[in-house]
Amino acid sequence: MKRLFIITIFAACLGISASAHKRCDHDWKEKMMSEKIAFLTLEMNITPEEAQAFWPVYNQVEQLKDAALEQVIKSYKALKTAVEQNTDTEKLLEVYLAAQQNLRNIDNEAPEKYKAVLSAEKVAKLYVAEEKFRRQHIRKLHGGHKEEKAN
Image (cartoon, rainbow, N blue to C red; front, side):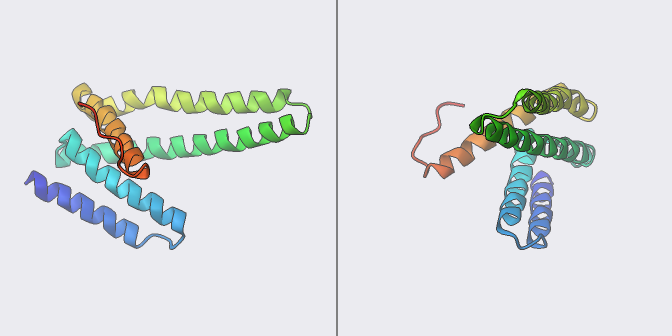
């Protein structure tokens, strides 16, 4: 039953990915999210009922993080340009630091949102699984040369 659920989630994610816009970066992000959802679902061992409550919360947090990161990048670029051109940086520095603080706030509030729909144990599994997923993809980018040390 669990395997069927995971396969169904993965197939649904691939369906979403297949119908996504044809832009390369968008397709890449959709594919990555599909892989991440399948990986996290399996690693966290969540039930269909838990998944139904959890994924909307997780997706909302991820959207907030994406928007906040976009602001960090945008404000960094403006700050960098000002530094390179020797113009006034005080206001741009404040904007950049505020954007970074906003991203940290979202990260700090996320566990409580997750614990509203999952047990603390499964939230812990989420963070471990996210890091495991991130490291696997970094190794892939580096050609798989680094062997994974003991989990």
